[in-house]
Length: 161
Image (cartoon, rainbow, N blue to C red):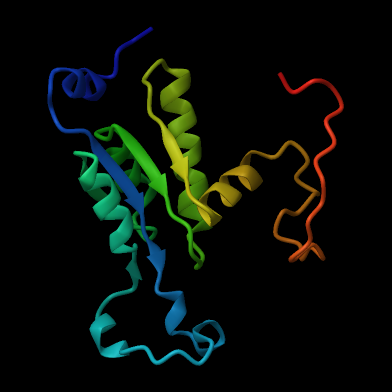
């Protein structure tokens, strides 16, 4: 198995570098804001974001963060990914699906080549990764489900141990 030089650097005491996929600034759209008062002026000139909490979480663990802009070309994303120790796909909203699917394919390609590159999906990020890797593409994970606020017991079909 080939050793990813970036992972080797981490093992030698270097700081891991983690990419975070950006999202469009969807919450400025009135249909998403739910009556919230948002100071739109702070977003002038920007088209995307990721929550500071993700950056603080990773930096608090000793990592450095690199933005993976959902508007980046595939060539730019591929170049950035080649220099990362891992990638985080955030939760929230917005349409960054095309970039996310490209990142997933590139991560799978890197791992298949023996270069360990973890990909973490949080909330909607995990949901989108699940959808992108689903075997049955006809089943839409985004379809509305009538299961809100319902408690259903778990019935194990065999001993969970």
